[in-house]
Image (cartoon, rainbow, N blue to C red; front, side, top):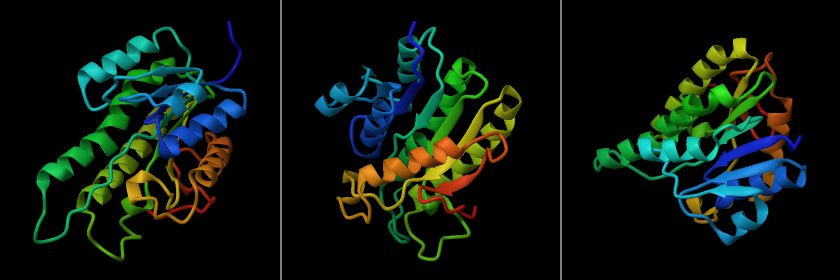
Amino acid sequence: MSDKRVVVITGANRGIGLELTRHFASEGCEVIGVCREASAELTEAAASVIDGVDVTTDAGIRKLTEGLKGREIDLLINNAGLLQDEQLGSIDLDSIRTQMEINAYAPLRVAEALYVQIPSGGKIANITSRMGSIADNDSGGRYGYRASKAALNAFGKSLAMDLKPRGIAVAQLHPGYVQTRMVNFGGLITPEESAKGLAARIEALNLENTGSFWHSNGELLPW
């Protein structure tokens, strides 16, 4: 049996998820990439891939748990996400619902399905956004994305409190403004830079700072 640290990453087929996969694989971890549709890059980087998984559905969660049956998970990274735009005067409630399902409810679904497989000393990292900060909102708009990430932050904080007695630490991590397809590659840092910063925050995560909301650069963000 392998003694490598097992890392499970959702939304691993591209962008930040793919770079996190590459990073942890380079660190000698056994990375299991989870996605709806595998990419050649993910297949090359990950030790194994569980594809065809829609984390917003019961069937998707069943497929995920079946693929991980009997596995101990040292680190779970809830990375899958969706950014859409809504402006006052043309609010699309279906868009907001979709973002809530993907950005907030899905990470909670995944955590609830898998936490029993995470040992004491294990960790959960929820990839959120500083746009989920209510105190930091000085530009408005993005109703669905902001609300869904704020909900994820709330879920993550509760997970941190509930899982602390089990020895599992949880963090909410903002990746930075990253050059990915989600923002039409208009970000300020590369996915590689973001992944390196996120990995450093995950390394620093423990039961003393569990529940924290961090920028990938180490800045503690306001709720």
